[in-house]
Length: 165
Image 1: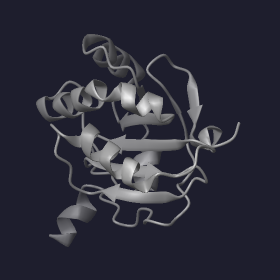
Image 2: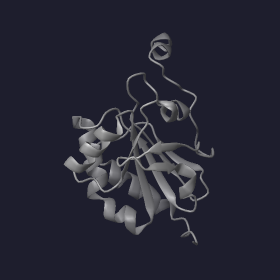
Image 3: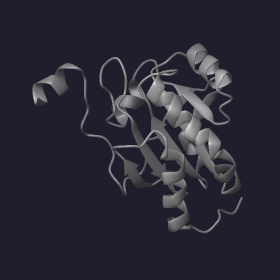
């Protein structure tokens, strides 16, 4: 099984809870460059998904969309990342009226950095990052229908002090 993982490009050496989240710069659904470190002082959800507009990802995206007002109220930025092109991300975002930021990692650099690369696509994995840029939670397995609520439950229990701006 290990040989198969190595053949398809799986990187098991991603960041761990307590690590500083690896910084990255990726284009969003509109082509605007987004740098993770620009969001220091805010809590950030970075989640990787295999491919836009597939049944599982659509359910997960809609779960996050349906709870987005709560993310916004708590000043939590949400980034969804896949290997899809900027154009595919925009089309998918518009189709399902997704209010959060979708990022295109079509060169697979960030997927490898975070240990989610599987060759043609990423594994489904979510990283919760605190205001100092440290990873506080990693979801290796997600329920696509309740993921938004699950993240908010964790963040509500965590209850960090609001960042000063």
